[in-house]
Length: 115
Image 1 (spheres, rainbow, N blue to C red):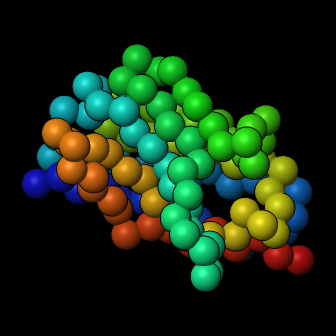
Image 2 (cartoon, helix red, strand yellow):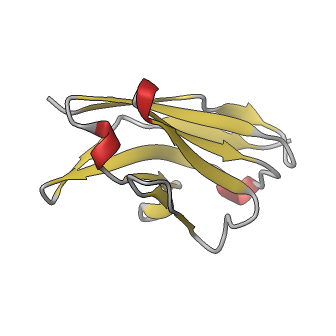
Image 3 (cartoon, helix red, strand yellow):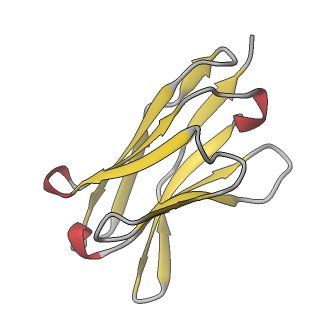
């Protein structure tokens, strides 16, 4: 079955950096686009970044120039490098894949940006 396991979250000061990882299994990772979403307390889940099977990327305006999504098909892992973090980046971050239109999510990893 499809499994997505996120890690790498934690507490970081404003201006700091974190790298999130999402290890995938149960599907042909190299053939599918992968996405990172986030959900802040009291807010809807929002798309942060996505990467196609061949490496094309797209970002939410709020993170452009600060976040970088990448993938390692050999390790079936997608990454989110987050730099210049702001308090408003505080959220649970999830990775996502769509298999024949059905979305799959991991359990998420919490990122807290605070001094």
